Length: 393
Image 1 (tube, rainbow, N blue to C red):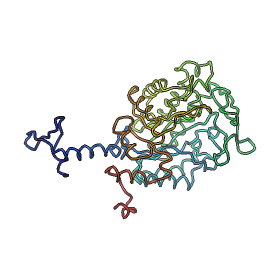
Image 2 (spheres, one colour; image 1 turned 90 degrees about the vertical axis):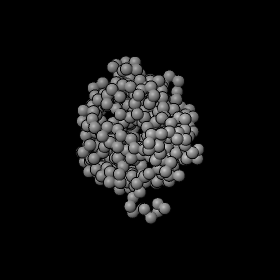
Image 3 (cartoon, rainbow, N blue to C red; image 1 turned 135 degrees about the vertical axis):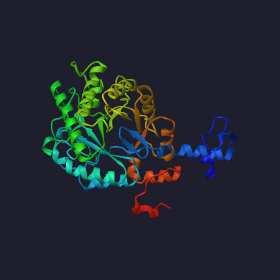
Image 4 (cartoon, helix red, strand yellow; image 1 turned 90 degrees about the horizontal axis):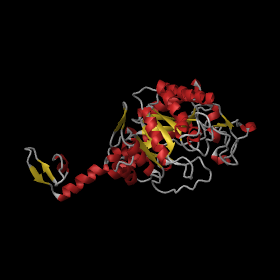
């Protein structure tokens, strides 16, 4: 049956051209096997972005670990991220790394705001690359959702006598009653923060990362600028859509000054606030178009996080339609994320053109070797670590 795959290009009238160029009918059973073979390998097809080639379409989504001291990566981060590189994912992305100390979500967050952070991050990036995966890092500023306690400590405000600090935001609007009251930042401070993102990107390059992602989602600082729910400014950073997009665009532009053109730049957005009068998917398309012009290569499409009372219709693939819409209308590569759990579901997303990559989070916490299992189920090719080959059969 395997010889069916060597017969040439199938025509729509279910024929193939033999070695002499003559059309001959294709056996029906062979056609079914051929189609299934073609369909099942989409998740494990390569993707080239800039000069970087992903070995498949599976990415490790950024997942906060709340396990750092003074922003430093440690053995926990090395094992957490390294295990998923060993597990076969094509792209392994760190959790949100703060570009300023005050930009951390909690005092235990990862950071990249000083050169001292480079060495421990470089160890991780090097190991990820050794496993055949692409090392990536998400750059972030938590804005009004900063200075909070880790989830297992109950969340809410981290007071200044318990490691907390004064938080900043586009406007003096707290995210929720148990969150800090922010100070509104000046226009000049916005520029300083954009340059902090660029300085962090330079450090990421020095550490050996090959993809940088701007975090502009989930109610953190850049998302706060985008949404009318959190941005009531009347200067050049507020009001109109063009003005509300300005901070994110300036960050992308500053990063591209130091981040090589050959290396991909991603941006994670919340495609909608899930609240009337908030940020919406139509505006996300406009943002994606603008960011494409600023040198962004892929939009990582999440949602929510900026309204404490939002009613989000959680379910398998509930955000995938945003990736599909932005990909089609903004003509930019996209990533789909959110309750993607089965190999068949992930393959379907790629095969039907809804997104260019899938980003998995909780599923990869449950099963770090999910890509290896997915390849076995779908008939895809994936590199097993030589140390684990005895388990492949």
